[in-house]
Length: 301
Image 1 (spheres, rainbow, N blue to C red):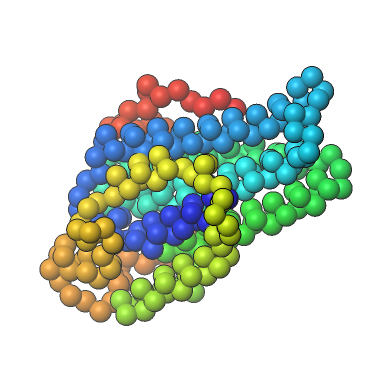
Image 2: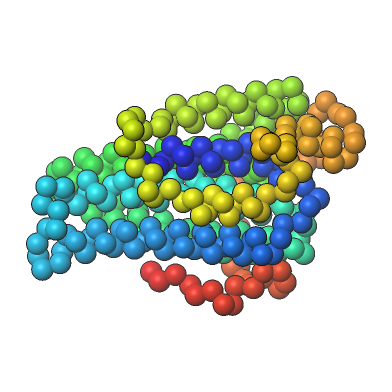
């Protein structure tokens, strides 16, 4: 299944997040709108696939897949929903953090709209986990799916930990307090010498937590390739080498400001406020400038 690839991509975005957040290059409106549309399409597709499984089970009272119980088909889709949620939260966190540096560009509005869509899909998935059991076998399958959900949420908060610590993007963590504690443990008082090693170990841990599916017939049909491409198209090119690999954070900063330093910016670390206990109530308003969402239909519940 595709959880491995989705989490791997989310980890790459998180590991390079400082480079993307600090880039002086503006993100193009056209690329951001394509990214919004790709995100919306992905989330609506997840809802439609879930509904199709349920409709197959209930149409005319006949199971369309008698040899494959409903939750054997539904559980992988629900797990993909939570894996996609990790990716959208990490990417939205990057946009929200950029909005703190460039508040007139509308990045924060896009991040909030993505989060609203994701929360609607999350609500549907959680409702199925709570109400979907029909027998003891379903309960065991749902319990396994819920364990995967909780593992994805912990890793989501770990990937967002640095942004929560430095940029206070607490709304995009599943548990803001946990993400902040991860940030203190892994990223406070970091030097450039240890920063890369920290992310190398974290990504290795994520690969072990979500291993690639064995066998040549691994299901990759549901990979959000359009969303991957849309996010990559938004990233500033000065964070990458000409042949594709990303530059280190130190190399990127030296390239941008022609200044060598051995420490991460101390003024970037700010104390967390009471929002850790009770995250702020965001106003999901339309952007005053930048991308217009007026022509985009809202997804149906």
